Image (cartoon, rainbow over all chains, first blue to last red):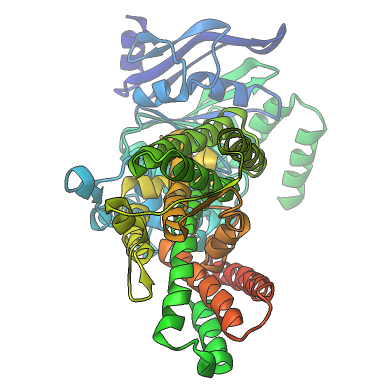
Length: 272
Length: 310
């Protein structure tokens, strides 16, 4: 009931996944303390925080890698208990990790359909329909705004880092992700490559997917985010909408006002 | 393929007038290649999925002892020995696979241990039952036709090899299982995240590699009319060598069955070429080793070029 009233208040976007006061202890050490947030369809929620803030723990909890110590997770307003990554995937929660996600020595088409290959024929003659796989891959890519001509037979290793990350995101969307969890998708990328991935996130959002963008890059978050949640030592220390805060303020919140944000301020002053 | 052509040209030039190019000469290297090839195909497939199997050589010897003991020593139907050998071989493969995926130990070590266990076990059982580790028999009937017949100098093992190479190529290149094998060897974590049943892929391939060795064990025992524990011991590394010469990556995730077949041909040509030259048979290893190193370098180069990393 609560989620329904809430989804109305969010301007028509429905709440796909809601975390209610979730926490996680590792041998008595609290890694996450009562975190609540809602992931809405067609919205990008940026989860910010420095290393050790609890971002990875939160990802592990909502993707079924680890179990909750407290609180609850709701999907479509009903409580769920993920006991494996597979069970999370079955509810439409897909994760794209920073380093893993694509296989460089396999073709784009083979990568794209991996684990859900389209087939032709029956019994022993059942084989992968590579023409179909190639079509799915190239069509999805052009739909989602990859402008460069990419051949389905091309090895993924020939793609740039950003294109590879984009491929992993696109296959998750194609295979019906309702909640897309991105763990530092731009951390290892250069500026242009990051821009490619960020643009893709906006397209993914247009398709009505709820995106959880986990990052420690406040600029990347500010570029695409609709809602921002800042974690620090396992707790939510800020939760605000777009335009409510500046990038400087976000960085200050993340670091808790110590040297790091001082550097950011200094850099900004010098550039102005 | 390049290596097979190169080694063929070399020995055609050196040993052409000594019978290497004759029909018998050709049959000899093809027969040698086919037996190694049957072992190497599933070993190469397994390597694509990122695992090794060193126990294949001892499985050939164990199969040989089982078949010869049942058929030659106890004079039972040959099929009894063959069925037992297949069951034991499948069991060994299953054990290799389950231990590897359950303990996450390197399969190199797991199957090395298994190789010694199977070898020791085969000698022990053979000595206990027959008081010998080498048992003679005289093959006849349909089992002989199926596994040990020949046309002229060409053995039936060639047919097995060609059929298996075609099946393996189809499975690796065209089926979902093949795509899963590439992914499993390419990056285990990525494959698992995509929903590929990586453990099932590995275990079934371990079973296949054992069964390939069982088939060669049956073929050789019935062809030589003799069962011997030491039969096939050279396959431990030559099977892997054939796969690598054929372009399968040691690190997994890439390779072809056709390449593996050509790797076996390279070995066949080198060993028979040396034989026809009248050189010491040990020189075969020298050539195979040389080609192994060259192939590794070429593969590495090709992969870098294919990935556009210059």
